[in-house]
Length: 124
Image: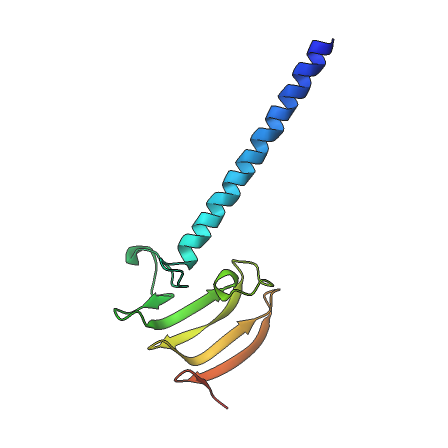
């Protein structure tokens, strides 16, 4: 009887251990996917994806300047209040400067405020 209980306990431990490893691997894979989408070599917040896999979202030009539509996510913002995949803010860049309407979000996803920029400066 002791042997049966021992085998049952060992089997249960192995099953739970297997589940934990699977979940840890999934989390690691998700984290890796997020890193690929939000970080480029050197720690920049520029998305590193082959051109054929994305539109012009979060793009830089040949000189490394941000151009066009950008979405900044929690992980990219450095704000710990935001989920890594939640929108922090979005808008357009022109020659590495914020340009036009930018929307900032609260951690719960609601709009915090909308700001208009001209050549990187907040328009009044």
